[in-house]
Length: 216
Image 1 (cartoon, helix red, strand yellow):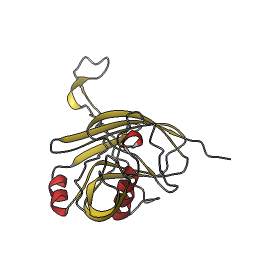
Image 2 (spheres, rainbow, N blue to C red):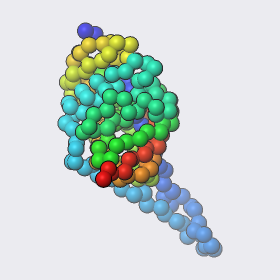
Image 3 (cartoon, rainbow, N blue to C red):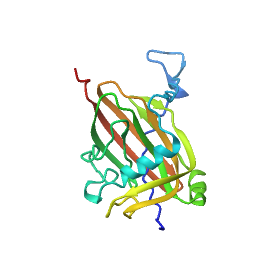
Image 4 (spheres, rainbow, N blue to C red):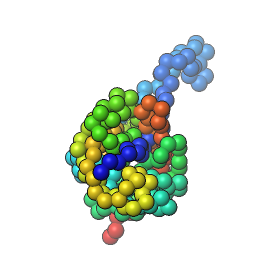
């Protein structure tokens, strides 16, 4: 079965830092330059992390599990973010290009996983895509670490009329992209901004995440 690859990336806003750009400290008369050192990326945790093949197979299957009207990648406000989620990982979706804002409730104690930008196709398509792929994610003002997955054989199951793969049934392909996996977040409100791009394709999603309190 031939499947036309669809880019369904996630991405987050890059925080720019003022580093020795001639800014003066408040009340300074001597022109002392204030240097703001950006926080280092939060290192990835091994808690609840999926293997490359499992991560991509499961995410693409999840993204292709709904038709256009309720699909999480086509979602414009977050109303479809909870569809078909599993108990051991909570997936977040990108868009088909451009930027969207979503509000999403996340259960307590569940790790998060999402791509900054990604692709399914053949090995050659992934090689070209990854040569220009880049992105970043910022959680509550701190940049989080990402991982480049340059090509993995994956198995994807889609439903009829889904806008991600455009086909129903199971098929195999090569998956690649720039990915983030996060341990469970603390209960409460969190801001997650994502940006990703490859060549002329770019995508961004701004998430307002509400992590539920632990049940007693």
